[in-house]
Amino acid sequence: MARRLLPTLLLSLTALLGLLPAAAAAPAEPGPSAPAEPPGPPPAPDPSGAAAAGEQAYPSAGEIDRARTEADRRAGTVTAIEAGLTAAKAETDRAARTAEEAVEAYNGAQLSLTRARAEESAAAARAAAAEAERAAAAEEAAALAAETYRQGAGAELSAINALLGAHGPREAGDRAAVIGVASDRTRQILDAAVSTAAGASRASAAAHAATGAAERAAAEVGAARARAEARLTDQQNQVTATGLRREQLLAELAAARSTTVELERQRREALEAIAAREAEARAASERAAAEAAGKAAADAARTLPPAGSAAAPPPPRSWSAEGAAAAIAFARARIGLPYVWGGEGPGGYDCSGLTMMAWREGGKRLNHFAADQYAQSTPVTYRQLRPGDLVFWSTTGRAADIHHVGLYIGDDQMIEAPRAGVPIKQASLWIMGTPDFYARP
Image 1 (cartoon, rainbow, N blue to C red):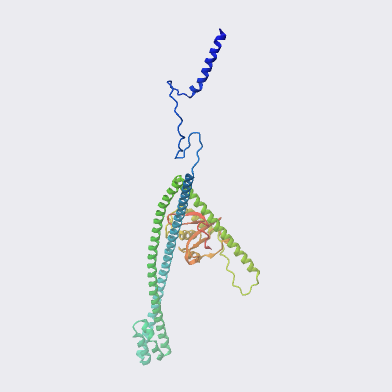
Image 2: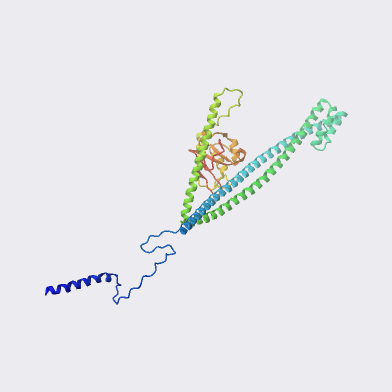
C-alpha cells in the first residue's frame, strides 16, 4: 500500500514545487491569470536625464556645458558685485575726506578772520595815537603862528600859514617845501607837525586797509561755511545713497551665492576689516623702511667730514610727560562724543578742535586749525613719536594743505575725531595710511 502511494506523493510534490515561482511572480489578488503579452520595444531614454531605478545617472554633455555657463555667469556676477561694494566704500571715503577738507578750510578762514579783526583793532589804535600826535603838533604850530604874527616875521608866518591852511594831513605833507624859509626853531615845530600828519595819514590808511581785510576775511568765512555745509550735505547724501546701494548689492550677492543678506553682510565686513588691517600693516612697514633708510643716510652723513654743510635740524622740543598725560586723558574722556564741525566742545569736536582743547588741558595753546597746529609745533619723525604728539595728513603732501590731525597715545594708536557721522574714537595710527607729518606741541 505504501509503495503504491509513494509515486503519487512524489508527483504531487513535484507539481507543488513547480507552482512556487509562478506564485511568487503573480499579483497578490486572487483571480484568473491573464495571458502573457509579447515583450515590447525597449523604453526610450528619459529626456530629463533621470535614470530608471537601479541604473546610475550620468549628465549629458549639454548639461555639463549649461552648468559651466551658469557657474561662469554667477562667478562674473559675484566679481562685479564685489567690485561695486569696493567702489561704494571708496566713494564714501572720498566724500568724507572732501568734507573734512572743507571743514578745515572753514577753521582756517575763521582763524584768518580772528587775526584780521585783531589787526584791525591794533591799526585803529595806532591811527588814533598818530592822530593825537598830529593834533598836538598842529596845536604847537598854531601857537608858533600866533607868536610869529605878533613879532611880524613874514617868512616864518608864510610857512606856518601854508601848513595851517592845508586841507587835511596829506596836503600838509605836500606843502612841506615852504618850511625851508623858516628858522631852526620854527623848522623843528613844523617838522614835527608835518611828520605827525604824515604818520597819522599812513596809520589811517593802514586802519582802513585792516578794516577791508577783516571784511574780506568775514566774507571768506561765510563762503567757507557755505562750502563746508554743502560738502557735509553731499557727504550725508552720499552715505545714504551708498548705504542703499550696498544693501542692494548684498541682496544680489546673496542671490548669486544662494546665501542670506545677513551672512553676506558679515562676510563683507570681515573682508573690509582684513583689507584695512593689511593696509595698516603696509603703511607701517613703509614708514619703518623709510625711517630705516633715513637713519642709514644720517649715519653715513655723520661719517663724512663737515665742509660747509647746512646746519643740522634742531632737536625736537622737550617732551612733557605731565602735559601729554593731561592731553591724552582729556581726549580719552571724549571718546564716543559726536563729530561736530567747527566744534570745540563740550558736546562735540572736530579733529583740530579736539587736539586744541586736549593740549589746552596739557598747558599749551594751539589754534583751531590743523595746519596751524603743525606750524605751532616742533616737527618730529615717526621714531621720535611720544604719547601726546600730533599726527597729520595732507592730500597734497604740503603742510599748508593738512586736513586731518590726531593725538598719538603710543603703541601705534591715536585718538581722533574722524568725520561727520563717526564719533570720537581710538584708532590705529595707520587707519588713513601713513601720516604725512608728526609734531610735538
